[in-house]
Length: 341
Image 1: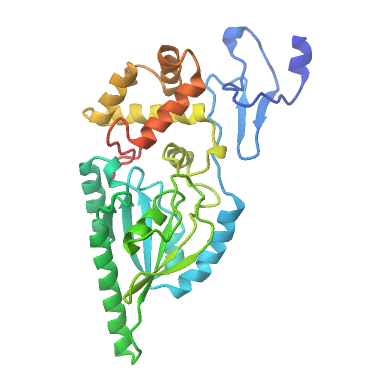
Image 2: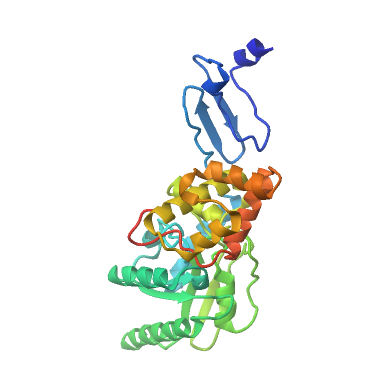
């Protein structure tokens, strides 16, 4: 039976399988073969000669996003100001790499949303860093409306400057046209609803809710264009892709919960090593009774599942991801300007 199994060049593993390689500890030797694991949205190739397994790639680019990107490039010709919304927990990973080439010389305002989910010093560092790079930056909590008034005033000032230029050219004044751009589920629709002071954009805590473009007249002074979330066809790096999965900014069908929970725990270990006094990491350790620095993310998930979930790693993974996304452990920033985490 074993000989027949090893003679098969391609092995299809069950959904949710955690390992795609045979280990030397099992005293099994496989030569001139690799074991392959395929799915519709990711490919994991692991050689039996490797001592450590490689995480499956996270890739999410549904058809409606490809269509939205094509339409967005056309809509950008009509707008004056671009409001780029990012997730304050991962400001670098939610920066679209092609946005600068799309908008050209148009006015660009960067909004760090969900400021309540990161430490205040992280927001301070990011705003200072981005301002040094020449950007105009705002931090908001669209859910509670914090920072919205300041952003609204900035849009009005943009409109004043634009109309002053139009006047110099002999043109009549008009309301400034702004587009709200960002990755899925970073809070674009919630931000628009706050700017408008009414529920005009459908807002839910999951990616891919907004599918169409919608012009919204905020006042006589400016209009907003709500747009679907966009991401690059190929994510910048797997580190960025994993962070998008941590924060629920890409579809859940693109990743395995256990893999992503393990990656989140590894990311937190790196944060602990570089930022020893982060209260959120202390809260996590106390809640689950583990020491982040003593084990890998994979092992931490195993320990937590044994201690709290009757060895059910899937339930443990779902709980870890849910608690991080809800901010149960307290404010936690996964990306800081001075680090490449």
